Image 1 (cartoon, one colour):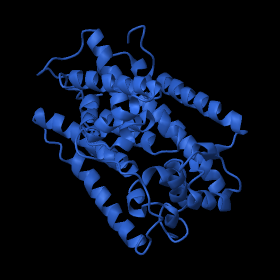
Image 2 (image 1 turned 60 degrees about the vertical axis):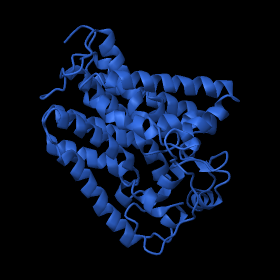
Image 3 (image 1 turned 180 degrees about the vertical axis):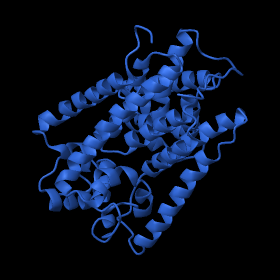
Length: 363
């Protein structure tokens, strides 16, 4: 181990500390009220009234708030045993219900009361940040890269936004990193289970598994399990939801997330030019994405190939996602951690060209 190398556990602790500092920065001005992280909205009366029945007064955000308000309802009944009381406040119960792992953990598998759930949602994301940093550090070490690259997890702006709104993205991406480390140890079954966990926390993470599958297929290793196991798990849970949520329609609403290719980007540009700060941040994101894509296509790094499908997905995102750096960064979470890996490897002359392989086969 080189002198500059940190133990992966130390990187994980630093990652957790970064999350705690951000948590306190948000909590202290609110009198340590954890509901500020849940994302209840001033203009979301159904979910906010539901929360006030269970918690009393809660912190609210402008407009509709964010996804955390739905995860709070799910965490109060993660098995959907009382859907008429909890799932009925979701905008689209079947769609929201597919993201089951984060609220399942935060809800203590159905045993935590609501006042514990609001804290558990935050603690779950904090721990996921620390674990994700440790796993990324171990992946970096397998590549003979500096372990401090693991800090690309807690410094990932999309993941930090996910934590601040009580979202499931931190848990989902950490499961993906765990799956990559399992593949590095040639533990394909464990990797498949972790990819399934990622997809059950945020269904779009199936794209991450697909990107890694394509990479291994190119290397003439058809690891069908890393895609099939998540698909089967999602299918079984979907059937369970259909059974439990029969007759529950939810409250409707929700923004259109997808559009024809590049239409959302083109429409967002019109909004960006009216807001110089927003334009600068959005252009920076585009530069990162383009640079990442060019470098990723020259490598055989699973962490990069898992992120590549998210660049493709970005081309069909709607203007509602593209015009807000907040939402765009969350949609591109895997890119913002993989990009520092590629940049550091390139600077050190370690970036493999087309045809060379640096995928670790053993931990």
